Image (cartoon, rainbow, N blue to C red; front, side):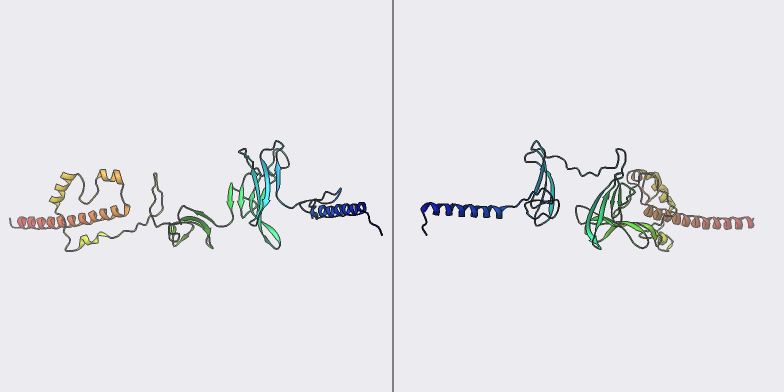
Length: 297
């Protein structure tokens, strides 16, 4: 069989066309059938629109856009712009009319029994719920919360079998600075271990129990050095207040410690009792002497 150069050229050309067609076919990654699923980046779409890769939804003017992309860490939805024309990102749930609030936004994560679980809800009314889908306040948390500070300190809202409580942990993250209970524990509902309470107003309480470092019963001991009344009188004339009692200027500037002032006042009462007893003894002696004088007339 005789083969001409022209035949050889035709054969080579047809082979090249077939090879290119085969390469073109293998590189095809999109499919746009007249019906069925559309695939971009894939020729086997599993849903009506299946995109394999990143997606950019851009404004007609070519400015800001919404980008949906993913990597090994997860999936990202980003509102961005090539330049400096970035805009806000709005997530909306439109209600059934222009004056209703009957549609909400649900954030779901994790599953139970194969079903996704709603972890946070934003109602059309504006109420936000964490752990609940029907919040009745602007923020309602069904469960405990932890509010951290700049150090290891944090505030905790929690509950137990007796009820809810609020407590603050100090900077070491372990010791409790203060605790407020929604119930009584041994008759106590609030404890403050560091610092105190500054109230610019009236404090109303049914009962106040103040602990002190000591109690002045030592005044009644035989070795107690009771200041003579003459010295007390001289001190008052010179200073304008009782010994060991803060003066008016000190009280106005610094206030008074109720525990300390009660101890001081009791001390003065006990000293006053000793003065009265001493005066009564002297009076009895004078009456006795007077009676003897009357009887010897």
